[in-house]
Image (tube, rainbow, N blue to C red; front, side, top):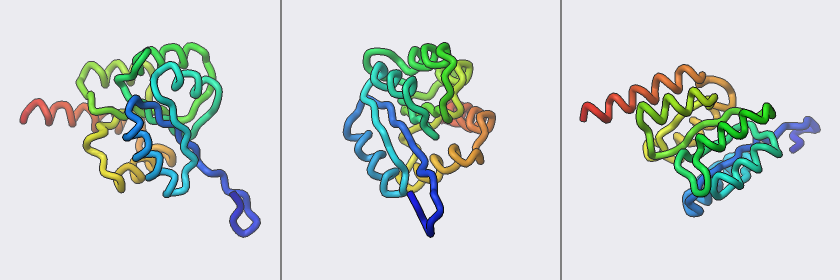
Length: 151
């Protein structure tokens, strides 16, 4: 993309999920905001895409068809290939899933049902620009689990 004869790199996002309706919803929001969005339905397709292209951000659903996010992460990181930030984006959030995801190298873990369309853009921007660190995301995720247990 060019603005005033200056090349501007459009940020790319990959969404790996099972639900086509959710994929379409998130894709529309992000593309309207100016992002280039690629999608993958299921774990195998998602693994193939993150193994063959570099994205600025990958939103990865934890529970996938074919292979789970943990298998996608293990197999991808074992390859040693570079990738942008990878964030788990799912409605499943337990202490165990958070620990496992971060131990496998993710950059964040977000509870999908807590994110409105405008918050999605803020969240994506924050991960891409680095204003949310891996440690901050982990602490916030753990606090959400503790909060939900005390209700």
